Amino acid sequence: MLRIAFIGAILDEPERAQVEFNSVVSSFRSIVRSRCGNPFPEGVAVVSLVVMGEVDQINALTGRLGQIPNVQVKSAISKKEFQ
Image (cartoon, rainbow, N blue to C red):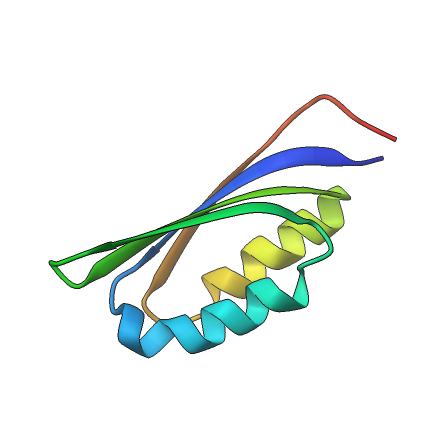
């Protein structure tokens, strides 16, 4: 069953993390429905993702992003299931 989830990421040093971050998100493009990135002049970027996929896929994406140095990730997964 599919679920909708929100994934929020903070890139503490975007210039160091963005290439790998973008690569990981691209590898999960089949579940990514929306992406919004906001750079801050203080040297931080915030990225919001809305995804729809199996819980294992969502957790895999969140886990891979969380392994990138200088990236902090949190997610919220809906309880409602879709087919």
